[in-house]
Image 1 (tube, helix red, strand yellow):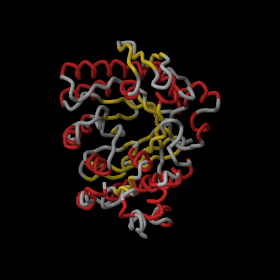
Image 2 (cartoon, helix red, strand yellow):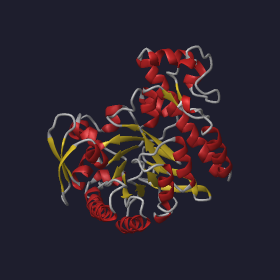
Image 3 (cartoon, one colour):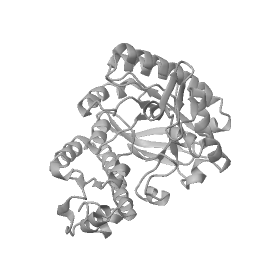
Image 4 (cartoon, one colour):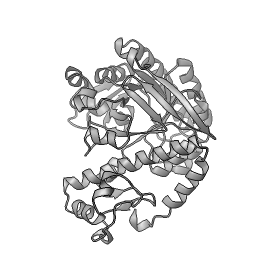
Length: 380
């Protein structure tokens, strides 16, 4: 049987690495991009089409699934994989970010976070133990520790307190995960580094997580409005503070040029709603930058979204047709735009893996940035 969790690095180029994570439900090629399946679906996509785009793993959301249809119901129906028809690995986030950003907080203390659902106002408690229980009921392959997120604009004292609490919650998360019986024998768990943009706090967080011991490590608390320059400044040191022989996952990132820069700095895994959300709102990603297919100039454009793209959408439909679908509010427009965007993201990961393997990452990244930044502002 395939190992529960085994990370192998095949090649490096500077700080960047390419390799694979072997799990019982399949192998994850790294660097990897995980499409987001918030509520047991990658929006506007069938699971088989998500897989055909090149995705090895998807992300599910603990907060949303605990509220609807509930983790207990998913468990009774055979677990998240069977429920949604996705047979490969699933990573579930801990719910911490959504608890802080979407719900009405009523109390936050050492126990956890009490909050009101954004759906119906019902009260819930999310603690490290409850988050691990939900992820176990869902049947997650990669379980995330529960943490506390504060804005990067908070004072250092606030950031330090939140980081310290996150580390105490990480220890409780680890204990609850390991006490989860058979699920823990077949799943992996990642700890989440916190500390905002502060190198000292990030270092303390990394040391605490490493002492606890996880299968992989996430870099949390970024992509929350600090800007690319600040994010990259943090990534210049944060990945290197984490164990070199285990995967590093940058949560919630991001734009294609964000991903390229983060890979250069040693990150292995990514997730973001951007390709699917953008697809539903008429934005398509191309090798020369994003375009807004709603723009009038595409009304009679006979070309594909991206002439260099090999996805089924670009091989079949013209920009003019997609422009019509999106402007008319047709469901097919959201489906086709999302499909193209997911293919674009997975093609970028293939290119990054190939460039690292051949020692040409610097040339690839420089060329990508030069072309991608060349898009006219009116197209974005």
